[in-house]
Length: 390
Ligand code: NDP
Ligand code: MG
Image 1 (cartoon, helix red, strand yellow):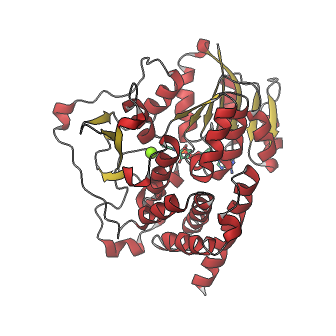
Image 2 (cartoon, rainbow, N blue to C red):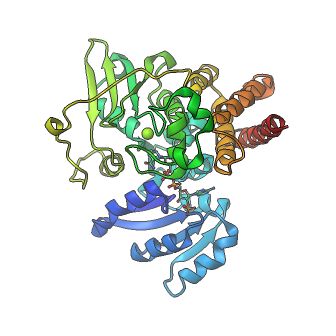
Image 3 (cartoon, rainbow, N blue to C red):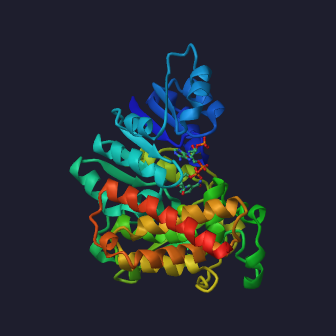
């Protein structure tokens, strides 16, 4: 039996992960499950999977969770500290599927105990890539990508030497507004940004797909995970979301990874790695699909992609700044306090401020420094938004 923990179990990725392990209950021993506000779902899954402990991110929900688990013998805990403590419990495989920078600390803790970490939480690598890789190496832990593009690249690289890689191409559907005239984006609403043409995902990543902030994070994630140079990474608009990524080799060969847009493929690959086993995902019928389309992304339309290039050039803590500012701007868009296009303006203004802080630019990448910088960037983002509103 493999001991498994799932952080962000109540979310879109967490539920897909549970769907896979619930099909083979005899193979897994569930240690910890975490959630946020959705206590009913967390308690339901903790009961049916007989977890050792369930943790909610919110301390004011602990009583509710305790009540929902009453009589089961399953421990209940709450808060950020309880999350990292639960991640330190011995497990063989851990899913990192919390949304946002809050996923970083539990992920690091899981690596410290030598677990294999399935990484859906791309913010972990964006905020603290070198720290995460260093931690994994020091503790002999393995990091497996779960983001579909990165899982695709990982699979295309099996048996290959990185020195033979010329470029990595990650695809993007283009999100909800890919066919909108640029001038209409100004007035795009929350409801319009919250629906994705191909993928069924959490609300935040769905909006990030429409703005391409998701792809911007993924470009940085590619750089951090595969250690390639920024100019080796390309983004390609591919509206059908069937090819998830391609790897180009020195001899001109391009290896593409195709699959139905269903996250259970990438999750299952990481869960079963290094083996492949049956997965309940749709098989592509290419004759029926007929054609696949591609086009280059328009950088004027997607400033997030330009900003990601700046972050890769700067390195260090700039990824943490970029992500934190994006999270705050996204919070404000979801609260209908700023418009769709204003999100990128906020992030750019916060990155400009970072450029004036040589103390932060030169700071060492430790969890403490990442968290302090993340906090500061959120304060700056709020200040920028107050200024813009005034
Ligand atoms: P969801 O919003 O669906 O789920 C997020 C999970 O994190 C939920 O369990 C939520 O709890 C919990 N959570 C929210 N805030 C906090 C917090 N502050 N501290 C601890 N836990 C918290 O997100 P997704 O599943 O869509 O995405 C999860 C991660 O995976 C993200 O990093 C995303 O970028 C990445 N990803 C997602 C893909 C997808 O298809 N969805 C594809 C590739 C990557 P609750 O809901 O109970 O409040
Ligand atoms: Mg992705």
